[in-house]
Length: 411
Image 1 (cartoon, one colour):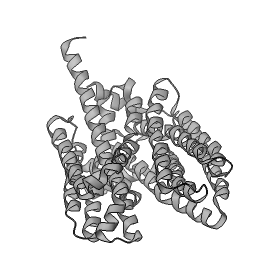
Image 2 (cartoon, one colour):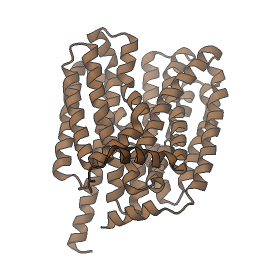
Image 3 (cartoon, one colour):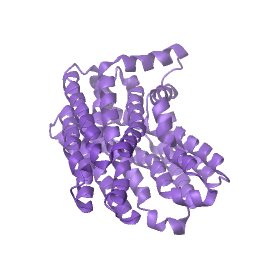
Image 4 (cartoon, one colour):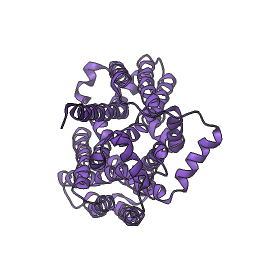
């Protein structure tokens, strides 16, 4: 292997780590709000309604504009959208750090949300175009761990937050996001940019993605996964405190540990894909474990530690699904340039699941109790299994987009 080839490989590895690291920084903005919320409520005298909206801003934006945002970043150019997204994150953090009231803070969170989607909708497209064919599925699966990793990094700061202060945490995030933007501008991979196109082309791209059955199947599977994992993450602290009488601190610690296991599942899907386990099988295993764990988590027969362990295993094995779904996105996109809108559709389905899953489970438990949760959780998991089988059939179609991406990566 000559020196030019070695240098090219090293550059690609640098690009991959820089892009994934930028995604982790973007997702940290979600965990930042979660861990800071008690201090923010005290400082700004927030009610639960506005406090919840500050946390849920990203999910609300994603559920409303995911595919449209994906088309927009593709029209802007993925490199410009990524660098601009990190810069927007930095600006949003600066505004939030100086927010005198809840309305300015909410506006800052909307700013951050725009920057967040500028980053997370472009990074998968850039990764798929620079990574060699044999490594693409693995890298895309590792990329899918950006969300739990970023959130957990912020949650780990919980014990230090009283000393740091939430405004200083915002300032630190502004500095880190801005630094990522500078590094991407100086050292980030180049990307082919597109000429300006009219609004008709804008809607045509979105329509092409929505009309592609394989894209819709992946989106439905992502929605089903998101409903499962976020309803469990939402329910676990409440279940442990109300049904098992744990303290809030103990329940929070067990819940954080269970969520941390999720990142392991995301990365593990990359190893399984590399070992030859097909996309649909990873997704089926995830939903099969969700179905099996429902009774253990909600049945009321196990002690708290065993419930937390069952939830951690479910979140960990369930993490096989998003890694496989992200790896499948380049294979189902109608064209290489339609990859950001395809990722946007998946993100929109995921964010919709973040909203729908906890709300439906909360309403069900409110009326019928925790033990009745299995009556909706288990059937929902079987719906995900059906989606996995549908993906098996859909992925057998010729993969012309992946061939074009291979040519880009090898070029």
